[in-house]
Amino acid sequence: MKLNLGKAASLLIFGFTILSCNDPKLEQTSGPNASEKAETIEFKGERVIIPIYFPKELFGQTQEEFDAYYEKAAQGANVRSSGERALITYEELLRILVTQNAKYPTINSEEGVLEKDLERIYRDFPDIETHAEANEKRAVVYDYYQTLCKRDVVAEVIALENAKNARTNGPSPGSLTKPEKNHLLLNPGLAQHYIQAAKDVEFLTPSIFGNNDDDNKANAFKHATWNALSIRYILKGSPVSENQAIDFTQDGTSKHEQDDNGNQVHTQKEAMDLHNNMSARVWMESETKWGFGPFRSIPKNDEIINTFVSRANSSSKHTMTDILNLHGGNVQNTWNNLYNNLYGPYQHLVNLNSN
Image (cartoon, rainbow, N blue to C red; front, side, top):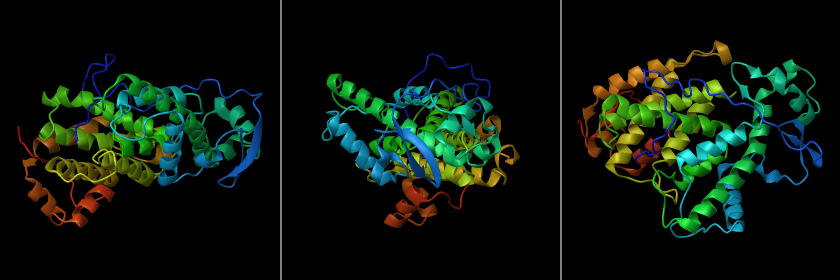
């Protein structure tokens, strides 16, 4: 499936580095109205304050539970749930994510909880009393604010899709698949880094290879670099583990290859993309060294780009049968592994058309 984000007018000049999102940062804006009625609930072992009418089912959701929540909310907003409908694009979702994530404290693996956010955290977590304690519990604090953010992101996405349905006949170019979109909406913070990586490689690919075609060396570079940059951005921009970053990226890029009903697509393009996605994740896992925050060693942007330019240029032409035979042949178990496994035995890239 072709990754198509459209051209952004504000893209910076390419100089073998990414300036737009080296290490994504968010600026905090004002939070919820302090006079809003609130209640206390328990979340992951902590007492937290939430608005009294906040939908509690958003806390600790599985993907299946979120999908059901989103479908109900979309139907309530009169978004058509059957037939062709205009889905949100990467660019549109990124704008929403940047705006909504900026309303909450910035918490990442290197700086942890910032001094400027402590007053709000103390208010929302009554049992957290010190900066050290907030940092110790940064993962729970992050998940709490991501849950609050999720409600507003969902509402804005549904409103936009509803408006697009009123004026658009059929899916928009560059739309996310429905499974991919729902995966991203489940965690807005990680989603922002994932989409920023996609946006960056969409610019880098034609700058390096002179084309943005679907089945050649340029596409091999694009998919591999997308996976690698997404993992890096998530690790640098949020307090999650390496495995969580790789898992979120794998799940998103695999759902990118599904149809809107969540079915696997078994064509040569999907075989190529899934193999290259997996190869990049294997490389990132092997190159990311143990440690947390500033003690973790992660490949830098230039290292990622240079590595996959080289590997794409040296990639050889394969048929779908060639690619599937690397993973066990054209059987359902092979496709399941390509779609669902974080890692595989290979780090090389493949293409369908060596031009």
